[in-house]
Length: 156
Image (cartoon, rainbow, N blue to C red; front, side, top):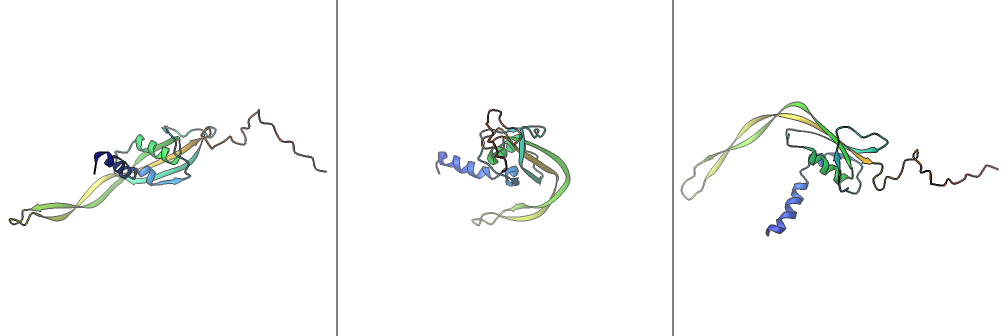
């Protein structure tokens, strides 16, 4: 495979590795160009919630970049997130123990089950779409003063 052909393949494979996006539940809109991660939820007059993502993981390498990527993908331009400690989790992993083989037979491995204990974290993100975003329109309570009102005929 040529190096230039490998770039799109790697990008495609890496796209499925965002747990905020994999666990997203809510409305989806066309992707946006930029999304901001903010500390607090925006006021209702500025943005509306469109979805959330919640999951448990022992991966603390997650950061604002993954949240912003997920927000852009679902059409949100604002997002908040936090992580809280959720205790310990124990998993069993197979650890290979390599042994030498006989001449011309290669080497072989035996696997041993090894318990691993890690800290677990509960991640939660909320995604918002600005009311000024394309396709949102204005809210009924925020009518434009320049818009003429259609008169309603009086009952006979």
